[in-house]
Length: 351
Ligand code: NAD
Ligand code: ZN
Image 1 (cartoon, rainbow, N blue to C red):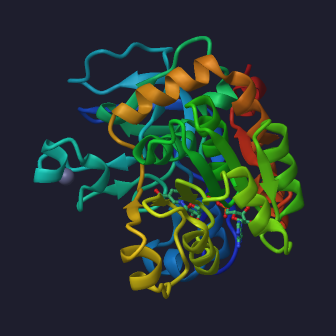
Image 2 (cartoon, rainbow, N blue to C red; image 1 turned 180 degrees about the horizontal axis):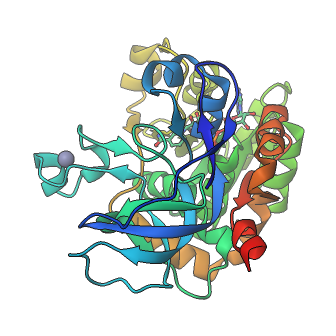
């Protein structure tokens, strides 16, 4: 069986031949993978940066954003049928700790992530805990259903910051920032600005018909943002670049009392003038990780059903899974929005 793995502790990912899977254990479901998104996390693992080299044990099949079809069901699993289309929450929380039991499973300290801590779904077939599966309505096409997870990151952040009637600045127009821009606009933000230095990504942001797309390296970027935000600065900042300097600049710009949600993961510690830029301005800082289980999934499903054209604009490339190297190259070049790999090529070959 074809799979894409971090086989060696160095830059790159490789195709591997995995043994066929056995019948799923109780509690588990086997799916035929139809399509899978390449996440920024997969790209971190590909680059073998400080975070991924400290966390991943090689060899590891990677990938965690997907849609698949149920092909086998573990003994005690109820509520699923062979042939159903599903996506899945990739954070496998313990289900029993105080956080899990109080509706905060997304920050469970015993979380294992598919494709990071346990084998991923960049493969022809995968076995997933039934608790984590999400049934996909027929009206959502495969390549959209493959990106439930990153749309969920964006949705979680936009919902937590509450953008309604707010001037909203999104720092970083990678796939998650672009999805966040689309969601913020649909959720009634007063204005939506995306700050993004990469031209290809800025062009995708433009296509979302938002209020302003600006390059942080241009000298008029700051005044253009203030113009859009009634001269006061944004009431909501969504930080999705992981760039510490960009966060500092956004805290300078933010209106007093603003909510600043942080989803981007910096490569290391970030220095902040907490007194001047946060405390004295009454800024509310929010750390955002994963997706709320499963409130965010209901919200993403509703968004995908209502605004398919916005999801479509952010997915810029669909490649056969065997062309994964080209997909990672696109990310290296920053020449893409979301890249989706098609795994149903193997079924077409078999038919
Ligand atoms: P990405 O790296 O593709 O996007 C980041 C974007 O920020 C890029 O397009 C880059 O050009 C842009 N950027 C760089 N410097 C900038 C600056 N000074 N100002 C504005 N933009 C700048 O990643 P993504 O897949 O969209 O993910 C965004 C971030 O979220 C990454 O840091 C990723 O690691 C992180 N992430 C967090 C979670 C979570 O649960 N918290 C989940 C997934 C990804
Ligand atoms: Zn837990």
